[in-house]
Picture (cartoon, rainbow, N blue to C red):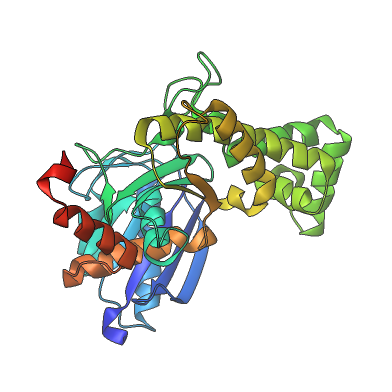
Length: 346
């Protein structure tokens, strides 16, 4: 219904994706642009412009923003973003003042997880961890229909768990973070090094970029993924190595949280089984208690690159209308838990 439309905006380290979303998770209008990542004011101006354009065509009632960074527990301030210029940025209130609409801000991985739980791969799973592989690695947990944000709103920064002691330097200030081994930046870094070296692999990547009218310097992980899915053996190997590290990190998360399902999204998930098959193998090899416990499934996200904006819009719409979400499996789990006898709860 027209009175239930919301704008969802997914602000990542390299791009802003936005759309008008209805109550069934359908995108009615869509826009994408580059992120002015070094200037917080320019990001704010871009968000305001996007909302204004959508309002010319649709009677939107709320704005949801999925932001790549640490969001405080009040869902109002971007405390820190490793890949953007936000430092204690009161994003919710600034956007609300400019648009005169209710605004919700959450971590972009939380919005992706919410979209998959509501409309995508996790609809029949009450306890889910979503991992998004983009410029970095985002993560989120949904437990019985509630995103878990932690005491200070900053849970789910899985990309900054250390997997290699004293490993590669990370933008967060630490070394050896998971996202330095299992994110799109890994493929981008490797691809550009090969292009610069003029290797056979680098030439193939440069040729693909040229076919798309792009300069060599624009080669990134998406070009690697496209060649891999087309059967390029070298690119398949690169993606498989990233998949190995993905599985290592997921095994760590499973040991700590024991979810029923991992949903892997973000741009790198376009590699599908080229990424997920080696991830499952590494996961099975690394999982503590393997052979004596039930293992969670590892699946690709269903909503693709639009999950973040769909989830942000849905969160904002529900909050503005103060409604509980619909997910039959999640509601059934809640009902089952509340109806258990005291003996079974012990």
